[in-house]
Length: 299
Image (cartoon, rainbow, N blue to C red):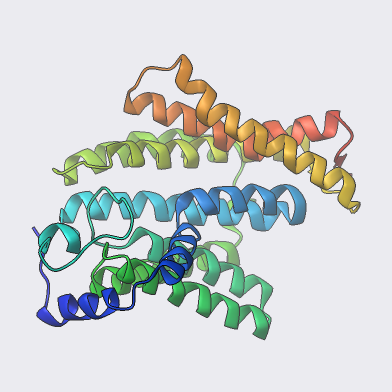
């Protein structure tokens, strides 16, 4: 089911008239920059090469946004424009799942706004605004979202960033003991997965809920391990950084695709597989970097 206004459909029809091979290809690239996959590549690069603190904080922001979006979509069960109005709206890209709210718009707003509050430079503010608007436009141009899907995605992204900034400002995570962090990691799937199942009926993206919970839980476990035992420090030389990044990304690909060969095709397997990606990113890869002398040990 979906609630829409006629002007929304007319707007999407107007955007369809702008379509052409060049614009379509540009829009497809912009679509990718709002996808969880894109941010999942960007996130470890920031964590391994730029700032552990910012990288980990960004991971929590993105993974929380991922879970919230999956929950809202499967709760609302609103169809996409090209599904509701197949005679008037044609999709530019293959897109499954429900429409409301727009995940691409939500994640883009959350990630770029969060980074803007940390970088605090006028040029980056402008870049963030352009990136956020571009993704929202691309989703409507592609015929996969109504305007309200995009705007509500931005609203959810803003709420997530606001909460994240409150948590960071009060230094709650850094002040938590390791035991408390482990307890939180254990509680996340115990609470969030039953919440998802209790609130939703559609469950077109059930695996997304399990993936988000796995990423959150194992990333926090990795944070404890790294903070207490590994304590890696990013080197200044770009040679070792690039090598470390390549090794790290290869590890992500091996876990994401290689684990499919022996894990069952089930949502609990997605929980474990994506959890291992989180653990690899936050702790195991840095340990490998230290052993290979691509990173140093703090203190």
